[in-house]
Image: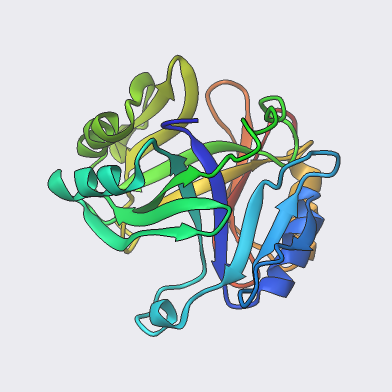
Amino acid sequence: MIGKFIWYELMTTDPKAAAAFYAEVAGWTASDAGMPGFDYTLMTIPGQPMPTAGIMVIPEELTGIGVPPHWLGYVGVADVDAKAAEFAAHGGKIMKPAEDIPQIGRFAVVADPHGAVICLFKPDMPDGPLPPEPAMGHPGTFGWNELYAGDGAEAVEFYGKMFGWQKDMAVDMGPMGTYQCVALDGVGLGGIMTKMPDMPEPFWNFYINVDGLDAAVARATAAGARIVNGPQEVPGGSWIVNALDPQGAMFSLVSMTR
C-alpha cells in the first residue's frame, strides 16, 4: 500500500446528513467508529470487511479560517514523520504534525509546494495484512484521484519524488493544458492538471465508482447535490460527473456506463 491512496475522509458541517447522502448515492452503510470522545462515522460497502471512507465534523480551527467542507485523501507511507519532513524539505508544508490514532495508525497532514493538501498514513496492522481490496471499479470504491495543481508539470515531478508515481497517458486539453495521468507500478491511480483560473486554490478531488452514472446522478440531485460539470465521457470510455454535496464538499462519480 506504499504510495497508494488507502483512505478517504470527509470533513463536513453535518456528518449525519452527509452520511445519509453518501449512503443514498454510493450505496455505503454508516456505522460509528467507536472512538471514545470522538465522533467518527465509517462508511462501508455492503459485503466488504473493511470500511471505505470516514466522515467527521470539520474542526473549528478550520471553519474559523474559512475552510469549507472537503474530502481528504490519505496516501500510505513507510514512515510518516520522515515523509512529512521530506514534503517540507522539497517546498511543501507540514499542516498537522505526525500523531498516532490509538490502534489505528499514525498520520500527518501536509501540503505540496502550491498548497494542495494531502494526508500521509501508516496503519497499524497487529492482526497481519489487511483483507484484499474489492476489484477495481467495484461500485462504492474510489476509482480515481485528481489534482487541480498550481502548476501541473511541477506537481507531477513533485509527487513522483514523494511517492514514486510515474507518468502514464497524457491528454492534450487545448487551452486547459495537459492532463497527465500517473501510475504506480504500472497501475493508474490518478491525474494531474493545472487548475482552472476560477478555482481559488489547488486541491485534490476524488471519484467514487458507481454502477451506471445517470441513475447515480439522479440519486445525488434528488438528495440535494449540485452538478457542476458533466456528465462527460473521458478517454478510456468512462463517464464522469463533478458535483457539490448538500454541505458544499466537492465529489465526483465515475462509471463505465451511463
